Image (cartoon, rainbow, N blue to C red; front, side, top):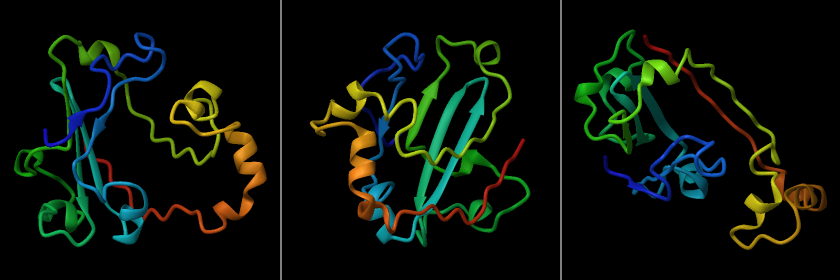
Length: 154
């Protein structure tokens, strides 16, 4: 894994106040303004009974695996290099705790998690998320999501 564990190692949201676990990707353009300025990138997630792995490649990077770049009908994750995040199932029975995935693209600005006062204020943001959105509509004038494609492999 090339990222580093940010806070918790127990990913069970019930075990640590709904914070789950997270990894900081060392690739500076994997999110935010740098991600946008670079034109995005490719994210891939693999979940097996051995664990969960997540990869990121910046758009136009020479390190994008050819099967990903070409949108191949099958992929070989063993050739993708080290993932940005890896959560091995050393003490978790993946088959017992995980069912079929559902892909949900939630575009809410102040949803159940981010809209919580304790979450919103923990990094020093004043007021509430809802107040910020309602009082600063111009801050979201250029906000959009542009998803070029979504591939699912089994």
